[in-house]
Amino acid sequence: MLFTFLGALALLIGGYFIWGKFVEKVFGIEENRATPACANPDGVDFVPLPWWRVFLIQFLNIAGLGPIFGALAGAVWGPVALLWIVFGSIFAGATHDFFSGMISLRHNGASVSELVGMYLGNNAKQVMRVFSVVLLVLVGTVFVAGPARLLVRLTGG
Image 1 (cartoon, rainbow, N blue to C red):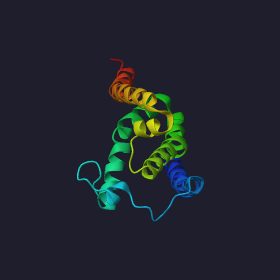
Image 2: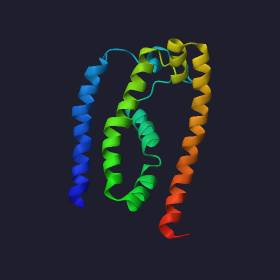
Image 3: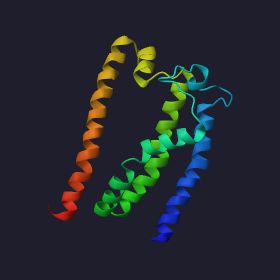
Image 4: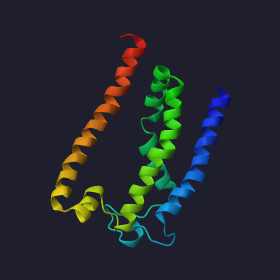
């Protein structure tokens, strides 16, 4: 069990350094570009924060339901859940979050729906706004119903 954990940890750390460098190269980041919070602070949407506070906010957003859902998924599906968590985190979650953040950064902190509107027009922007709200409701529902269903399955209730 300890070797499995250490292997997963090594893959996540390796993914950060190896895959992360590759993704940075593909995207072509600009180290000196100011974030919208520093370039245009407005006290509401764009507020400069120390790095550790940004880290904590991101960590809480990512890890909020992970310990509950991940443990239950592992109990139900076994080692496959560990593979999904490790490789999904590296190749899907981290890559998506990085590209979304960098594209928003290049467009002065624009949201996804605003970005869609810039490239695909106003109708697509409105569709994206509705889609985003529906998706948020569905994700919230899955985060509540998923663990509940797994608990019922595990306890036979």
